[in-house]
Length: 150
Image (cartoon, rainbow, N blue to C red; front, side, top):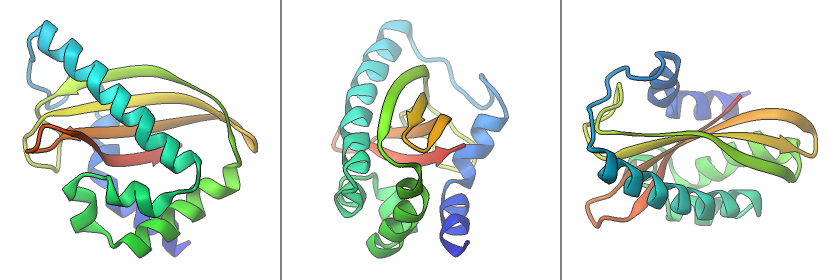
C-alpha cells in the first residue's frame, strides 16, 4: 500500500495533466518539430520500457530524467516498480494509443515533453493503459520523467 502511494504521489503531476484532457496547458509546437520529437521520444520510451519489462528497475531509475532521480531514491523507485509491475506479469502486447508533444504540463517546469499513452496487455491483466512522460533533458537526450498505469 505504501509503495503504491509513493508511485501515485510521484506521478501526481502527470496524472493531473492527463485527467485535464488534450490541449490543457499545452503550447503549440511546429508540426515538423513535433513529429521529430514524438518519434525520438517514442524510441527512447520503448528502450526505457524494455528495462522495466525485464525487471531492471534500478537501471530504469539510473537512465530516468533528473526529475525522477531527485524525487525518489533508487531503492524506493525499485520497490515501487516491483510492487506495481510484477503482479501484472509479462507484457503480451503493447501499442501506442497516442503521443503528444508539449512544452508545458501542470505541476512541472516548462520544458520539452512527450506524453505517450500505451494500450498494454499483460499476462495477468488483459487491458491496461500505461502513460509515460518523456522529457528532453539539457543534454538533448529523451528520458523517462513519469510513469502511470491504470
